[in-house]
Image (cartoon, helix red, strand yellow):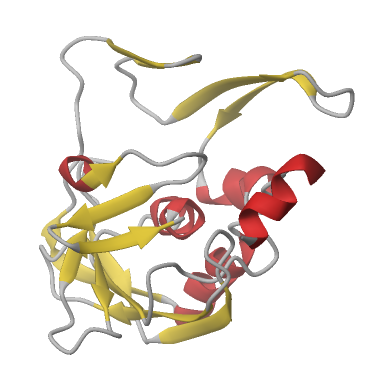
Length: 202
């Protein structure tokens, strides 16, 4: 889509609930942002509303969640929020969070996806930007392996392997479009084990 324009949302929309890992009440508000803002979180519980852009340079190590941070300011468990923003092809948006973690809601990206659809899209004047990989990339983190290869569209080939009879080894291939995300991925839930419950509660 070389002639595609940058997109933001048409109006603000908010969701409230409890964070998954930290168990605190939380509110997340998506707001329209000027062109070239990018996808930027703002911690509205801190007086200066410090910003945490959703950039790989701001990713921090975390167990079973995506964590972003700039200096002392952090946000935890933002993966479902970001999945919905990317699937909606939103380039510029403020994501205001009144705490360290957005709400988990039903454990999937679907409530965030539905909220962004409700907010609508506003197209800008500037051309959208795309990442073109010059060569394949491979990252190994513990038992996890990630590979990225040049392609004209976003395709995912994902395998998980857990020593549990209800999960075991599973594999899925997906061509990511807005329609496919809504149909096949948005409602995919976070899962956990009973053995982890007390640790999460603590």
